View 1 (cartoon, rainbow, N blue to C red):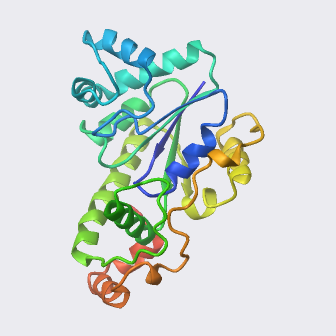
View 2 (cartoon, rainbow, N blue to C red):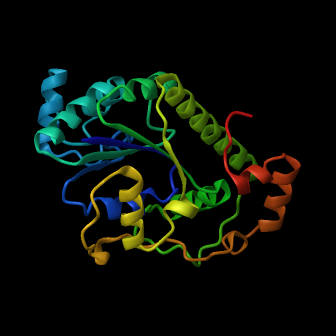
Length: 264
């Protein structure tokens, strides 16, 4: 059984991806297992198993005691959930991790995860400029799914972008270091080439790359739609020219368009 871990940032297409992958009947999809406010995807049986492991009682997926234990014992938690899925003869377990999720040292945690059976790492990137704008829009409307933000134009801060980019850059560098330390080779993919496609094509594409069985017919009514359908970033913000100039002066513009190559 495969343990598919997608290392990414918020707003890199993982919600859309997850809405497609979860339709596979043999896929155990968790989502943001280490989200700071809720362990998304956990059911009562999972809470009971993890509670037994921690010698505690976890009432629900946003139980503060559960969240504290998960963040202190991420590898132990993943191993226990993997074993549960394996007993049910699932073909794969899937969850995603963003830079705000791990509270244990990232390099060591990634390296230890790589030692678990079936570990199948995916490093997913999207053009940083688009990630940042999408995240800013979703934050402003207070919704990360099922909210149309196409007509919303926001004012961007170059200073805030630089702070965010530093966190994202460090995150990818640490993930890469952890994978290298463990000798694990990830599938390095991008939103533009490997996610931004029709649901049926996406399902087939990921099945091929991850070595999964061919997907069954999808129920497209359950697939998440884009929140922002505007293709031009300049029409998404109210201060495009000033923002671009500020990033150019800070030597961040090429990276904003091209992606994070590692620590600067």
